[in-house]
Image 1 (cartoon, rainbow, N blue to C red):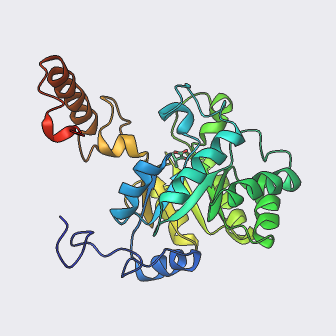
Image 2 (image 1 turned 60 degrees about the vertical axis):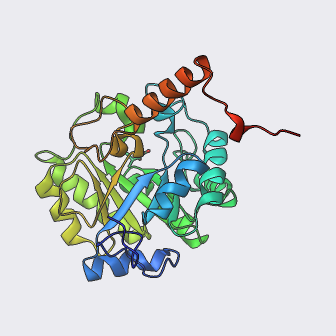
Length: 281
Ligand code: KIV
């Protein structure tokens, strides 16, 4: 709960005094054992609330496709849509580090394509970009890093490869664990500032976390990652369904529905607007 001393309650955020979170704070957080808190955000109104709550990193995720745009995967998301969302989030954010996803089809061709796409997101206000995939992406991570663009990697279940992976499945089981570990090391060596681990077995996530000096941020990867990320609508209980690895910390969907019901009733009963809501002259 928030107190007069701390708007973030009793937990200590990665940087004190409301100062902005910067890239160097991430490695420092790992060293100190301070957990990193990341949430998705897709628009200014939500970003402002999540930023004020002390969220360390706001991810303009390509999950905007499923969560906000009505698609059934992240694949249809366009770079132009990510640019608009990134601008909106960045304008409303004072403290969090804003990370924007490179959407499907905007970086896989190689470093040149990745750089051109990442530049657009950085010009829109991102502080870093995120891309999916392991060792084959290391060259792009290196080029972006050398161009001054911090990169977050994403391993395990990578939603842009849902067709190749055969659905929403846990990754890195059995022999695939060593491949994932090698991928993590390749991305870190190429200069990645952090690594999202999605839907990987908890012991593997712990092994990857221990083997790296950059922080891991887990989603469905257990508690031994250096931080956690959730899609904000899952975290806040915006919809009835959320994935098994998420926890609903609120029931915002029901609160919104009820507010709309109450508003509708007030209009129909003519109790809204009342005198205090109108201008007499
Ligand atoms: O786009 C997204 O929301 C993500 C998270 C699931 C990490 O990549």
